[in-house]
Amino acid sequence: MQETISPVDGSVYVERPLATASEINHALERATKAQQGWRQTALPQRMETCRRFVDAMERNAAPIAVELAWQIGRPVRYGASEILRGFAERARYMIDASERSLAGIRVEPKEGFTRFIRREPLGVVFTIAPWNYPFLTAVNSVVPAILAGNAVLLKHSMQTPLCAERFAEAFTAAGLPEGVFQYLHLGHADVSRLIADPRVAFVAFTGSVEGGHAIQRAASGRFIGTALELGGKDPAYVRADANLAHAVENLVDGAMFNSGQSCCAIERIYVDASVYDEFVERGVALTKQYRLGNPLEQETTLGPMVRTSAAAFVRRQIEEAVTQGATAHIDPDLFPAGRAGTPYLAPQVLTGVNHSMRVMTEETFGPVAAIMPVSGDEEAIGLMNDSRYGLTAAIWTSDTVAAIRIGDRIQTGTWFMNRCDYLDPALAWTGVGDSGRGCALSVLGFDQLTRPKSFHLRTVV
Image (tube, rainbow, N blue to C red; front, side):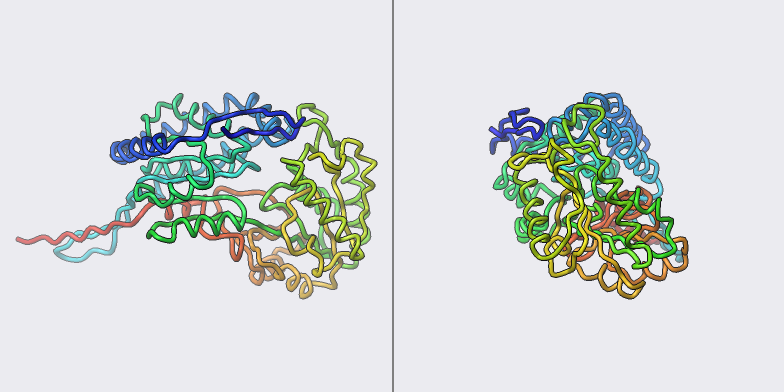
């Protein structure tokens, strides 16, 4: 039996039995059989089914927001937006993009021959989704996989089992044939065994670097694809010509939203020395305006971290940085809900930091903004690239030409100008280094979920 311990009050919010070996085998058999019929379904019908699925999810946005608060501590004032905006935006974009993305490719004419390439589904796609953005991360692979004619098995984090069940309810309401989408509550050993099963054709994983290595090991005995969206230590650079008010507002939000528990949260901020003091002053003032507390209350803007151990890890990083010479600008007493030994953690702004400190090199995954002054573009570029991660990076400037020039030199999957912590479904979502591999979203997101099949037809008279 798996238990979901709520960060709200430490109670057991959900209990679910783990799937047995027989149930896992039955799910694979059903998925394999259902996929054979689903792949023959015309694409317009698949698209319409997925549209109904999104509609069904949106209708349940309000109760889902409450469930997210209990499962992961996301304030209810923000929880519904994951479904109403982010989730629906991504899903609907991929639905609309599927016609051109899945269309066959005709090559140049050749007398006596008909030649073309089709995109065929892989079979059964196994999606392993994390707890921090349980709907947004899962939709990146689930909807395009089903649009492409695959069947999907979804394994959600033990912290968010209700999210997988919400997917299943919505697909049932949409009229998706039985077996095309299923979820399983699994332990780590069963995840590895399922990846090794020859009936699984592809694995989409979002999680930690350590988890990514475990997925690779489990798949190493087979020639199947794996998409790995892993960690981040995402930097931002504020140039002297930036709109400072806009930069402060967006970067503080980029560091603190969801209590900093985002793979593309802003964790390192480099500010031109000429505007550094003002940026820090404004950033500290804005951070003090957060309301830490019960995520079920509308006035709460910062909820608890997912578990006490996660908050303790962040506290240790902060304390270690201060011991090494950093300055903490936020007095925890301003946030009385933040208490040691609980998942409730006050936000923090650190200065006097450098790259000898873990807070600037290791993923924090908490509500902490660490800020360094830089002398200009060259120093900022060097520091931004001084990381084993490369998921997103951002620049605040009024000079688009400079933004592109600098972006060409930054080792990252996504380069932002004057925004951060956002996935545009029209753009490829990918990472470099320890941020993983593979490509989700955009018209390219279907490539990893299909295989090309060439037709070479000769006419003989």
